[in-house]
Amino acid sequence: MKHFLSILLAVLFLFLLSIPACSESAFPEGIEIEDVDMNGGGDAGVAPSVSVEISPRASFIDDIIALGRQLYEKADGKYQRAYLKSDIYVCKNFTVYLFRQNRAKYRMAEFPDVELRIPNNLPEKQCRPYAYGYCWEEIPASRGNPFELAAQFLYDSNQTKEENRARALDFMKQVRRGDYFQMTGDYSGGKGAHSAIFISDYDPADNTVHSMDSNRVGKRINGQRYGKVLFDSVMQIDEWVDFFCLKKCGATLYRLRDDIIFADQID
Image (cartoon, rainbow, N blue to C red; front, side, top):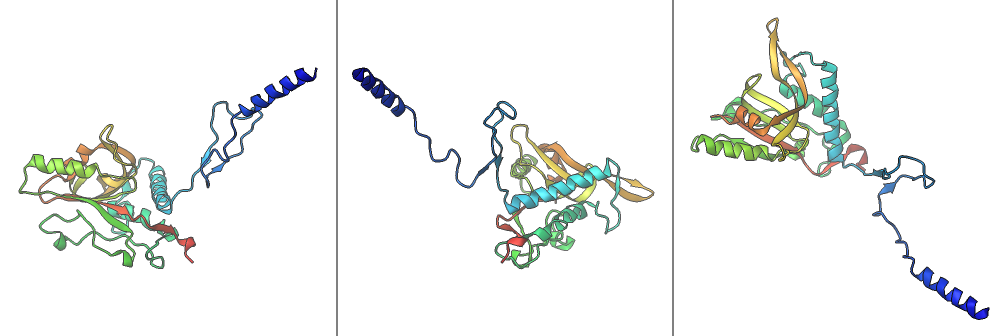
């Protein structure tokens, strides 16, 4: 009997050794995991959600896009007045309004005491020999400009149309979510300057970009200009290139700096 118990204990000991030890943590440090019902509650096969902290820069972009969606939904497909200098549905006014309504929550880490500002378009005389509207004034970050020039296209008359178009397409492939877009050209709603915001990265799978803007599509009502508010407008980059890849025309992409911080985190 003692011999049998000895064998049994030895087998049990070997079985316990064969069980793998649990690691100290199955998740990286700092990631919060929701409590999981180990008694079978919840949806079968659904993994617990992970709380990921969003960066201030991404939060700023989210706020801008969210307000753009609200104005789009408020317009409900109806044309909005884009005639007076004060009308927020003028193309540049629209993008500026989205920025200004959300800027109070944010600063730049390098200049935490400076309120953020968005530059005006470069004056017409300073745009020459190009047409007005392809870029902004150069305002330094020390004066509150949180944008950097990410990419720019200017039509080169010394190149062929094909060469210019190839450069313009490469320019559009650099679009990233949150980029502010400034162009001058001949677009669906008129000729001249136009402003927009891209709300997703360039998608190489189908060669498209997603944007939001106002007054790219418009009409006159009682002699005044009215424009449509567009949100999540999906277009081939070739369509955008058709707008600005013209003599004396061009376009610029402006991107928020990486050092955006929350204003309430300033000491």
